[in-house]
Image 1: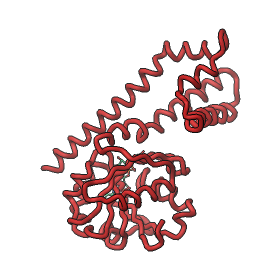
Image 2 (image 1 turned 60 degrees about the horizontal axis):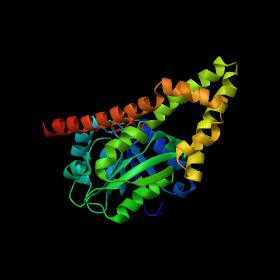
Image 3 (image 1 turned 30 degrees about the vertical axis):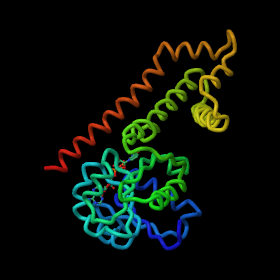
Length: 267
Ligand SMILES: NC(=O)c1ccc[n+]([C@@H]2O[C@H](COP(=O)([O-])OP(=O)(O)OC[C@H]3O[C@@H](n4cnc5c(N)ncnc54)[C@H](OP(=O)(O)O)[C@@H]3O)[C@@H](O)[C@H]2O)c1
């Protein structure tokens, strides 16, 4: 990251830690000071106000219900020359802009936890206050821990439902495939390796070949072979519709949380 910048992470919970650890592992960030603050003091933590005063880029990584209190505290200390990147689900850039000093550049990001191992995916959108240069700062940060896509803000809840929550869905699939391996006689360690590398490999096939998943599936499915028997079970178990419904429900929840945050913020 540009040498002169100081990066702060406000809220060192699951996602804040993932980003902090993910970024410190990246050579591009080896010389970037990364400061952090938490609610309950931990060694090395700054106060929220100190953090905001000493950093030009602050990543807001608290729960949606804590945003109002945090913005009341830090809002006046932001302003021109400061970029606030919020990873908070369901809180819009307009709401964030309302809570901070004029001139603050606000960017919204929805990362996911594989950022910890450099394989995250983050969707970004700029607030009215942010220029392409501010979006570029956010891009630089999140590209250090995975891939980045730019979206319209109205798509952010959908991103939350798909890639924000997605690792959890895939852990359930991975756990099930591993258990399946054990059921058919494989040692747990071998089953875990087979399941995880198969998911990783299939995902890479999709990215590298850029072919439709159905075409890739058809290629593995030989007439009267084993795969078609497995696929029939998946169809009977309604895997497709279940996964679609999981994303739809999580997206609805993200929208509902946004409404709730609006109501509570207005109190
Ligand atoms: N987890 C994910 O996979 C994921 C993915 C994408 C986006 N997000 C978003 O990331 C945000 C954080 O999620 P999380 O899972 O990391 O939550 P979390 O584990 O509960 O972490 C929240 C953090 O915020 C801190 N905090 C709360 N109030 C604070 C205050 N007033 N001042 C300073 N720090 C404060 C907490 O500090 P204490 O520990 O000291 O209380 C905690 O470290 C959420 O808005 C979520 O929507 C999460």
